[in-house]
Image (cartoon, rainbow, N blue to C red; front, side):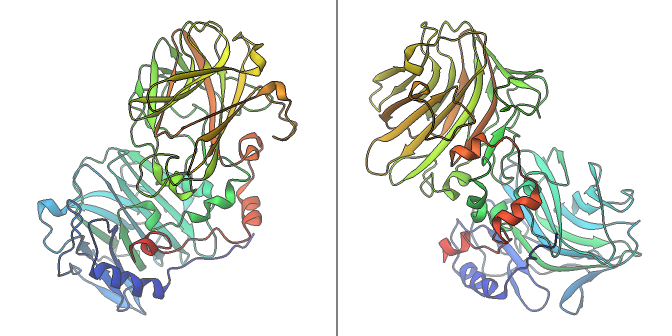
Length: 500
């Protein structure tokens, strides 16, 4: 299926030049070059966010043909900051990401790609490494199954992420629109990014003529990829989903959440606590699709979320670092599978705000009853039996779906569904499976917990009932039809609008 293409727009670049001229420490664009007279930035200090009055210039042999940089045995480089001093480097924190239009015109059996440099030393090479047999990948890392087609223009995105300890590469063909699936799954990624990063090199072998255009370097993934149309997906699919199947078996502490979540948005911290990943999986009326589950046995495991995706979806106020709260009107659904036959304490996922308990759903204390508990800002606890108070935890797998309606000027509304009939809509559910409560459910993290042994699986977050309960994930081509061409790459659509 032919889909809408994408490119960066000169008008946005003119606006960018104005923004960089008076940028604050919050500016996230390092620099841009269209190799046809449009060059901005390259005066950014990653340590302070400050801008110098002068800009870095390209080093090495720079050949320009028809408004594009050309390399053929050449190794032009550009620094993020004109001084390239120690404090003008990325040093074990933050993210640096680059996007460039990339066309290999020469021999695809050789090498061509973008490198991240630690002062004068090459550290990471992404693109078409030597020895890759003409495929996209990372040197000394993973090689993808995607071949580089001679003469085909790609948008190459290269990531060096100190937060998650990953480097990754994506390549999108010109004339196609990437889907959310493409962004969640980079073509190749590899661990360990411990070196400093100070400059970018664009290069290719003597036999591999390559052209480069519209290079953008930034400190946020959303500055090279526009995520605002993610809302078009949320009617059909959760924006966050974790089947606990892509982890190393055993203790989950220290492992980053790697379920389906748009790349560039990620947990602020790795899992902590002593829970573990085990084989097998829970199932409820087709809800589960993958092996692997989380086992919590007399301990807990916690995670905090990246607020960016919640802010994008209207569930977090700008720069509030919390989900819900003052000024937020919006609805969040989240659901999970749970099996707990002998809860002698508190079982279930619990929302936290900092160190304060907010809302736990599953079982309360030693009742073994399906129930929830919440705390107000003064620490007062309220509890509520679920499903008419008739059911207790047993050997069966139970499905919980929680719906929080955040109210900007008052208490939030909570609705909890326990073992709903997934053949029915939300409105058609029996009263016997529905419980409601009001409170302040603002949160910033989540803890899976229990005093004995509980298994959790298939955790999902979405904006609608259908986004959680649709089991058949649409193919990317279906999404393209659903979105009608809206889901396209844009240049600084959201971020620069704020800064301007």
